[in-house]
Image (tube, rainbow, N blue to C red; front, side):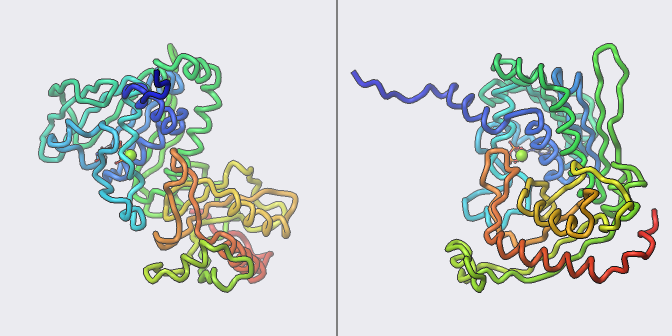
Amino acid sequence: MATIKPIEGRSVHQIQSGQVIVDLNSVVKELVENSLDAGATSIEVRFKNNGLDAIEVQDNGSGISPDDYDTIALKHYTSKLATYDDLTSLQTFGFRGEALSSLCALSKLHIVTARASDGPKGTKLDFEQSGKLKGTSVVAAKQGTTVVVETLFHNLPVRRKELEKTVKREYNKVLQLLNAYACISVGVKFSVSNQVPKGKKTVAFATNSNPNTKENIANVFGTKTLVGLTPLDLRFEMDPSNRPGATQSARNWSTQEDAGSREVRIVGHMSRPVVGEGRQTSDRQMFFVNARPCSLPQVAKAFNEVYKSYNYTQSAFIFADIKLDTNAYDVNVSPDKREILLHDQTALLESLQDKLVELFEGQNQSVPSAPLL
Ligand code: ADP
Ligand code: MG
């Protein structure tokens, strides 16, 4: 008798969903990214009991068309990508059509949505665990979409227990991630709150619809954070093929006819390496590629190395958005999309360090810091 058999469909869905949604962080990240992709200018994130009971993300974005209700939470249904090739010119956060489908498999999820043309009426959508639409009802709603995720991991007892144990730490990690989205999203008003059982609702932080990232940073971390920050605007060109030790992938990439521009621009804000000025901790270091928050440990290391060579007693506040051609990196690396593969990281890091040294050398270290707002 054959012992190799396919896994039953429902179990496959549950297994794969567990890789997309690994923790509280991935839930919030996926929902906030969906709101940003929907063109929202106001995003409210509400936690109930640090997220253990519920996570709600409300936006004022486009809303969802009734034609899409049936498929919105089905696996690999997306409005953002049609073929693999589209990945190289991706302008949205989402592209795999997996988040809502995975959340249906791992939590109790419902959506309330209304488009501008729907008036003060919205539609509540309920889903089955498979992501199939279970039913709809008419409710009062403003334009936009609210996604409510209740009792995350209710059907994965081991993960649920783990989450119950670690939820406070998880919640703090989520706040850090939300800080990054709120700082980078110019013109988007963020508000994040938490309601603990029998306690008061507390606002973790809020931003206004600021016209620039500096004001976002001031809203999130306080105006004092701006003391000693210098604007970053580094520009250079990567030439991966000429570097000794360039990887084969870099060489291939550089010879592709459609490789696009190799221009790099890094914009943001960073502590000036003046001893005694500001006092930042390393959890205030945020990196982005084309405004997508991501973890770039090698880039962080490169920044910190240069900073430490001027000031080894403190650690820097760093907020850096690396603007690259969409051909120059791959976001489809990890299920949670936090990792990004930069096609020629070595060349980028070398030029980055040269430019940073140039910036710090060029600054008169004794000039007063940038004025506050
Ligand atoms: P992806 O973001 O990769 O497309 P998701 O499962 O996160 O996959 O979302 C599926 C689809 O649902 C999206 O492509 C989008 O069309 C729609 N959608 C999800 N969230 C929202 C939202 N907040 N506002 C409007 N549309 C949304
Ligand atoms: Mg998405």
